[in-house]
Length: 298
Image 1 (tube, rainbow, N blue to C red):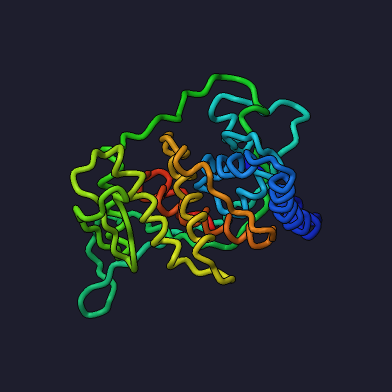
Image 2: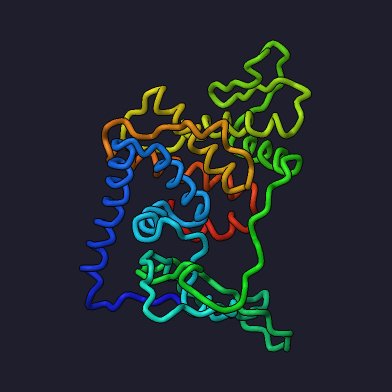
């Protein structure tokens, strides 16, 4: 069970949650300024581990428990055979409040009157509606004890992920073409058309296609500020880093991405759009991720 915030403290909690998200970005900026170059990679790692959560929740997790790897509410941990150790401090995030209403359609005859004939009752149709979001407390696996959990992290088979990524690109209105003249560059994209060198092995083609898909996807994500070419290139790398990390693939080719431009608020927006793009791609590659991400706010 997720611990719900007491209504008397809602305003104070919501204000502090905004401060937490702001402090998370500011702290990351300060770490980068002080020469801690691994700070961004650590944050993107959190984004990869929790890509099914909203960007706001990722910031909250990063601010409160940056080493978290698996979070659940108290009841969920109990159902998994584990318990939250006494005295552990919860991690505050937001969860969707969903209302479920059962609808039983009445049977009517062709003349508009209710039919007297007995028919097998139809199953009630559930109508789900989002009422809003509520503050809840969750806990990391490191804060619990009990039964060992099965290892969930596995490396993705790129030969299976490559056609899924291609299908996702086409579903977004992108066109994939193959061109021998690309030479050493091996991949390029412009205005929705992605070109790849033909006959590449999946392990080589996947990161190249991923980069171009990320680049084109970022062009269509709405944002508040103007984006330079250099910013766009760094955000594309960051998206690829998150996706590769989440899939258990080598992300060394994207590890040199930089999202800090001397303005923490601008970096905060970059982190938000990187999260949105990465989550959409991962949702397409992972049905489980897609189902859960549909309940989150971009």
